[in-house]
Length: 254
Image 1 (spheres, rainbow, N blue to C red):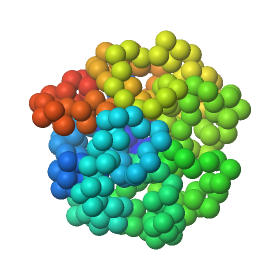
Image 2 (cartoon, one colour):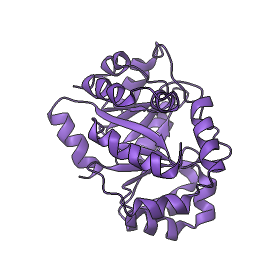
Image 3 (cartoon, helix red, strand yellow):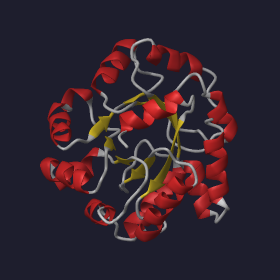
Image 4 (cartoon, rainbow, N blue to C red):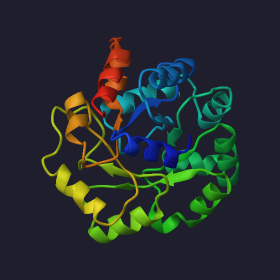
């Protein structure tokens, strides 16, 4: 199922899309891929897989920690793409990576290998709209969607331009700051999401700080999907019964 088909199906059922996150290589590469399959089994509608990077500027302590462990394990982009070719998942997979590893890998090679690895979307937090034309063209040739992000500090003009270029969905960063589990959603989040909805009918997926079923329920009617990252990584790190957490988060989307 494609990204578009997934959002259309969930909209028809009046459900938010649930997109949990894993860091490739944490706690090991094999374990992270097995955890993707478990996430899909226990309720994920979409999956986000982060590529470890030494300077993850948008990520808080939890994702930084998981990325550092993955790098110490020797996990690199090539290893992840090779391993993904052998993995069959029942829902769309979106990769997140900072720009430097992608540039080092090579643009055309990257998108050919993403296609071969069954990756349907790519989030690049530090890819500027003004420098994206060649990336968008290469992605289109291989059937990969490039997903752009907007933040509460984005102007209305910037939100409109970003929404025009993004493919698959628009990633709405819920707060000004880095990733990490939070106790409450920002008070201004509904207003921010209304600003986005005023300029696009593309799916809006909210990430950063979403940690509880209550957070997810609060976003019904304001967004089309949610990303939960640090809370799940923390649960795996602490050896919690995290599949139950995943089920409760998905249940809150319905």
